[in-house]
Length: 124
View 1 (tube, helix red, strand yellow):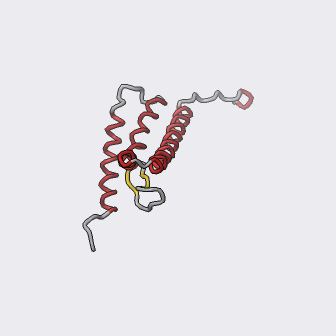
View 2 (view 1 turned 90 degrees about the vertical axis):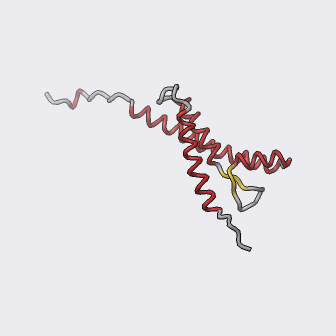
View 3 (view 1 turned 45 degrees about the horizontal axis):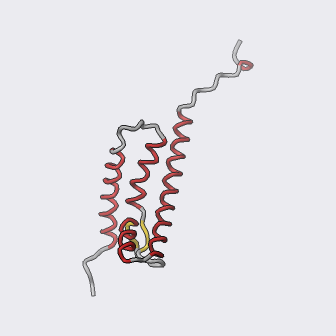
């Protein structure tokens, strides 16, 4: 029997809404300096929470947003599914923290003062 549910359309709508939510999450930390590691780490948490997918059950090929899987696994009393979803979240958080660290390193390299020229090769 055909259904009206299209998972690709549902995921597209969800990703668009999650990206808008991530922009709002970023705006919440306006009071922190733009070039701070703390702000980068806090800003990464929003997209990790919203955009990390997780399988509906262990070994399933159907995915849902991880925060929804955690909520339903906790309500249904499924500790193995809960642990699996937390692992997906930790993997997403690891990627986010690596992104924040790379961004910090690039920012530090851009603010690095230029090294003085070597006097041996200066024109006389």
